[in-house]
Image 1 (cartoon, helix red, strand yellow):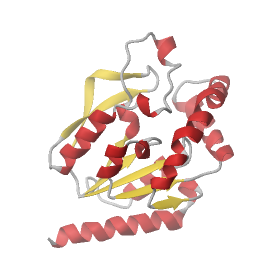
Image 2: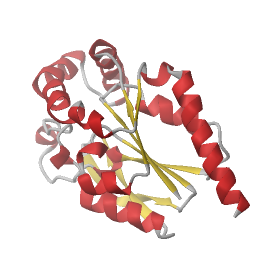
Image 3: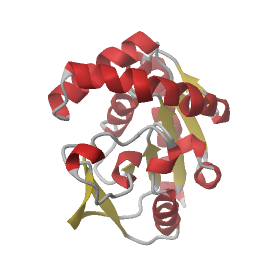
Image 4: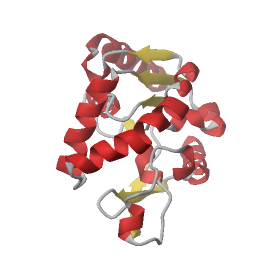
Length: 207
């Protein structure tokens, strides 16, 4: 099994990179574990949940994430949590069944901030993008997909997203084996990562 970590700032293009890679392979060959599924649950009222700091490492249930990654590595099926950005809570009844695969990709803004998780990663990629580009993508995504207003997004950017990026996410870049500039538009880097996965899959097939 090859476990790949893909980190980067909010709106850097991580999901685009992951989607382009996965589209090159057959279903089930590459499994993606999104960090966002592991946000900690909360019993606070919705108005308070919306104010939570989602860009701090303490917001992630790394204990569960690490446990489930180790289970996958040991050939066990996991029940991945389901987290909703609309309610800012984890589903009490729904999970996603994830089976082991030869290639596991873990994607998220904070995955390099946790020493235990870093130790589980065989290769670490950091998707880099200019702050202005990331902000534009965040505005578009949060308004269209997460029910936020532009003002809500901008207020969160100033109070939380930008300072957390500078404090935690940008410094975690030093743990990356390879940095991918230009986000999801860097087809050369994406082709390189795809080639690594193809080589690894061919090794598994020949065993």
